[in-house]
Every structure is written in structure tokens, then in C-alpha cells.
Length: 118
Image (cartoon, rainbow, N blue to C red; front, side, top):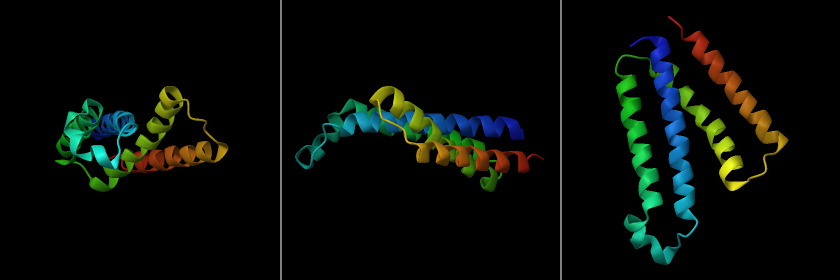
């Protein structure tokens, strides 16, 4: 698998992780200690877990012939997607510090990605 294709697969993983996190948040809203035994009945939680699982399978496939030191940092882009999804779906207010942090993550991931080009 080419370097560019591997990076695209890992970015897909980051998006899937973020969507999974969105479902986990939706499921967690109504979760309490008394309902922990009913997690298997909460379809939003199950969807979040399933999406995480699919992301893991895609990541394992991508790791087969590519460098972990290049690909794993790319998963940090999930922070960017979670911030955007939180703004859109949960109407969360994003602060300047968060935006600055996201810019630092994007810069760092870009440097790692371009540095790993073979």
C-alpha cells in the first residue's frame, strides 16, 4: 500500500473514531450507575462501540506494511473531527485555546505526514 493511501486510510479511521465518540456521547447522556447493566440495550452505545471496532480493523489493515511511527500520530486528527462534530451536533462553544490546540495538532500531524513520505 502506498504512503498516500495509508495516510488516507488512517484519516478515515480518525473520522470513524470521532463518529463513534459522537454515538458514545449520545448514549452516555442517559447512562447512570443503575442502568450500567442495560448497556447492551442502548443502540447508540452499541453503535459507538461497533464504529470503534470497524476503525480498529481498518487501522490494523493499514499497519500491515506501513510505519506505526508515521500512522499513529495521524489518529490525532480525531480531535479536530470531535471538535467540529461537537459544535454541530451538541452546540458546544469552542474557545480560542481549543482552536489554537487544534491548529497545533494539524501542524504537527502535517509535519509528521510529509516527513514520512518515502
